Amino acid sequence: MHKVFQVGAKTFVLDQAKAEAAFAAKKVINGRETMTFNLLPLKYQWAYDLYRTMKANHWEPEDIPMGKDIEQWRDEKIVSDVERWIIRMGIGYFSAAEGIVGDNIQHVVRELVTAPELKLVLGRHAHEENIHADSLLYMIASLGINPHECEAMFEDVPTIVRKNEFVTKVSKELRRDLDLTLPENKRLLAKNIFVFGQCMEGTQFYGLFGMILSLYRQNKFPGIGQMFRYTLRDESNHIEVFRNLFMDLVEENREIWTAEFKEELRELMREAIKLEKEFIRDCLPVNAVGLAVEEFLTYIDYIADRRLEGCGLTPLAAGVKNPLPWLAEMMDIKKEQNFFEGRVTEYQKASSLTVASDDEL
Ligand code: FE
Ligand code: MN
Image 1 (cartoon, rainbow, N blue to C red):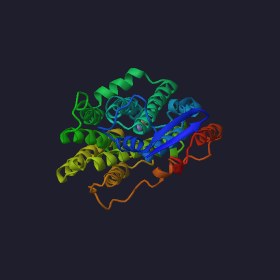
Image 2: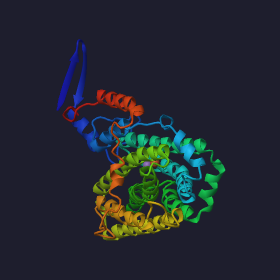
Image 3: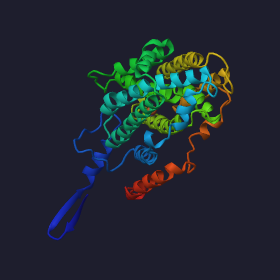
Image 4: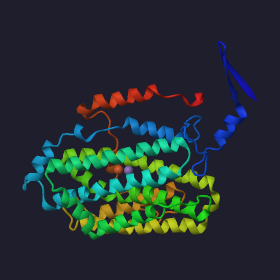
């Protein structure tokens, strides 16, 4: 069926069949490749919606004052050695982990997916990793930490090295020419998306989120805590981006979803949990004021099971209760920060102007 649009002497013909074929050719992988980045018609509505949510949460490190943190960092009476050690581990781990995630998005995942709206949200995701990396630079500079120290931690702390190897391994496997029509290669990509989204960002980031934000709840390092709250909120969207991507990839390629593959993914999560628990014990060698090691370890079991369930996989430690219920509330950043209020509102307004309602699309 053809529909003709006419403006004066000019006409434009919409070929309905051709438009529908183009829509059907939109796929997570092995879809139509065009150089024109055709966002419309949207097939993956969730990707566009998450892109808008992420954009509305925009923040910049320099908006957060660090005066109080600098004062506390220097005062032996206010901050203990254990607390200072947690901050160092946090800065040391995240300053490179954010880069690993961003690099995997740009050079692996965004390269391999074919639908433009998926590339759009992945572009935003990668940009947020740049903001996170920049926030760590800002923390390092504010506290006067020697930048080489962070690099040394990344290379010399065995629990950090092992966490990194766990993820870089599944990234390297995909950095070559791959025939993505083969089930084994589809599984490599699904594994990458699962490991980065659910095991790393979804589980292995949470030991430090828990520890640093529990210091923040005790009014320690308010600037760093604030940045970690924004980061936690961003990460929750990243986990959702990768979860949706994973689910749609599986949905469109059902042949990969075997009992064996499901078990392989659960095993990867099991390994991720083990590495994270060893890392938590390194960060918090003894129970310090208001910080109980056991709670953080249990939290990892709890959150890992939520990630598995989110991907349609059987939990590993079913029935574990959330020992840190306050952590979820930390993402709920409303209008409490006056210095930030104006900007958040501005971004929200700007984003609502570009919205085409769902039934228009
Ligand atoms: Fe991040
Ligand atoms: Mn992230």
